[in-house]
Image (cartoon, rainbow, N blue to C red):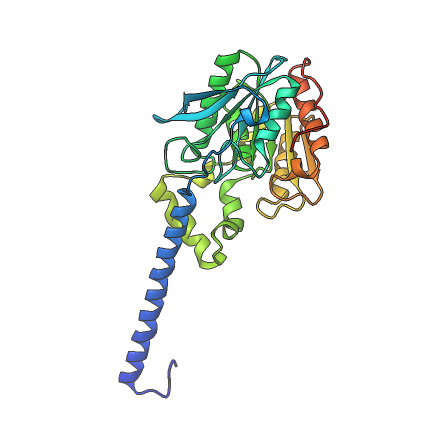
Length: 321
């Protein structure tokens, strides 16, 4: 019996006190979980502070429509200095912008320009300079990327390769699965399935204990934001790429999106395309493969681009960062 030494009235008061405390803790946990979840899907904008001209690349500021909603996204069009006949669309990760300094994407764009590729860099909805406030980690972003692919195809009339990072990598797979306008995909540090990933790694982003906050956030946030994490499933879509070139990149030291995600995607892709490739970079953390080994990184990229356009030029050793 609970509180056996207490008189009935005092026992009832204790039960009420404990029950009230449990209710208060539950309310606080739910409120904190919803607040943190809301902030994760509505992150503060990372301002765009640089430009391709800082890397010696002439460019044009562009706006183009997302394939979903009434959003006109902001970006840069960087025409190849010496065109080879291919265009690369760069898709940045979560809570950053088209520059993604952690990679850094302007260094990648510079290397792609040297290879002869046009480059389109843009901000997903709710990030950088693009309109919107909700960041859905691939659920709506795939429509933004489709808009970018359509713009690039119409602008240059060349094969389009999508090269994505983290959220952008998974979004690249989802987008390519639904349009033949994408000729190849390079996915650096993708997650395999958003719902499964968040169930196991949400605390990496919330900095809250997995119990009870993962269940609270994943249970309450989808109906509030109208985002279904279970629908963001690159693992279920990757086979739709068929025999289009696919390169998956992951760091073995990635603590944000562990390399088993890329491995699972690779194993699934190989069922329909034995030529799909996986490059695991020893000790590299999240989207850090380029910094760890830039020469090998560009060599892998070159092989994908060359499979799409044989006129692409080999990368230079000096990557400029």
